[in-house]
Length: 161
Image (cartoon, rainbow, N blue to C red; front, side):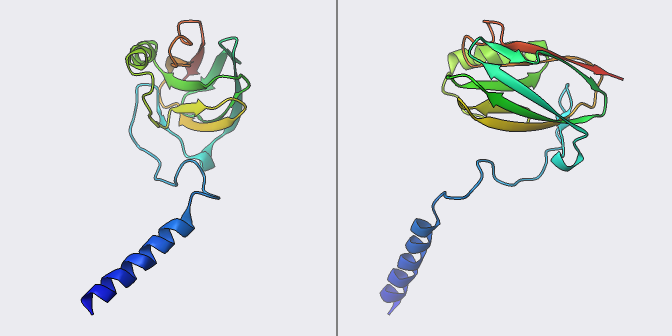
């Protein structure tokens, strides 16, 4: 009797797994907004975004726009579009953090990561990053795919008090 119960439970579970699949699910699972503070701010609540900035990435290794001015405390929704034919990403940070991360990406080009301050965007696709700039200063955004950052795929963010 015990064996029949085990077989019955196993078959029910396997049916649920096969029926579920990935269809209709968003890429990023719903999760709590991180409160981790970085030198350039923290993840923003999309419901509290005060404005949306559209950023285009191209195979010319450029961001458009490449210079942004943001008020300290402002929460911005970045809608990041890859209009190129190769993978691009937009990663927020300080100049040194971006340089360090770019070096790490050279050593581990297949490295996968998903942080709230980055958008890894396939050709022809769009991703969103919502960020709150809690500190005044000069920051950057760059594409850290090997060779892209070095080719000049970097922009500046001036956060004003």
